[in-house]
Length: 222
Image 1 (cartoon, rainbow, N blue to C red):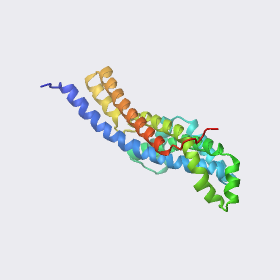
Image 2: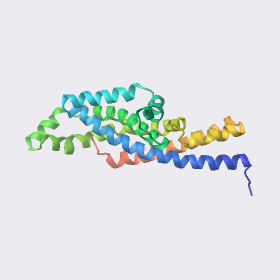
Image 3: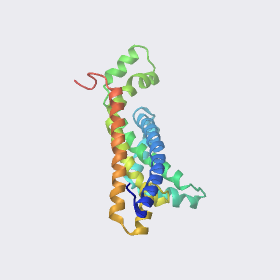
């Protein structure tokens, strides 16, 4: 019977704890990012002028500044204003806002790709502006944006590793603690890389299944 050394026993126990925390970060951040991305993307295309400016400013701010800076502001900066966030809350909020900004750009591009004839045809059938967007435009745009949005979710899985800098001990944070204790960084981070590879592979599988469910033969082809 194979018996692991104390180092590997401690490492795997720590990484499994970190994996649970990573999933607790990734899942709500991915869902929140998609929701904000669709909402912000729609506002940037169909909203009033001030709403479009607001959406553009949001996207520019969170796409134009490093995620690590955003996390530092949320966790270490907001207490200066009397707002205190737990490490988990700061990480999730940071990931949601950053991911949503990128998702909004994919959604915005997909919405703008829908030909104007779709709007005119819906209006001719008696659809209101909201009904046209809700039932005609968004379902088509989602299918066109899904590749970009899925790619952003893959990125989210990997940059969730930054949560440890605000003391949220996820996969990378737990592994770093063990690596520092035993001074065996190469082995620890190689195994951490395998964990992330597994998460990304699983996400790719799920995203492909979603794409297959949403696929409409001939859609998007001239």
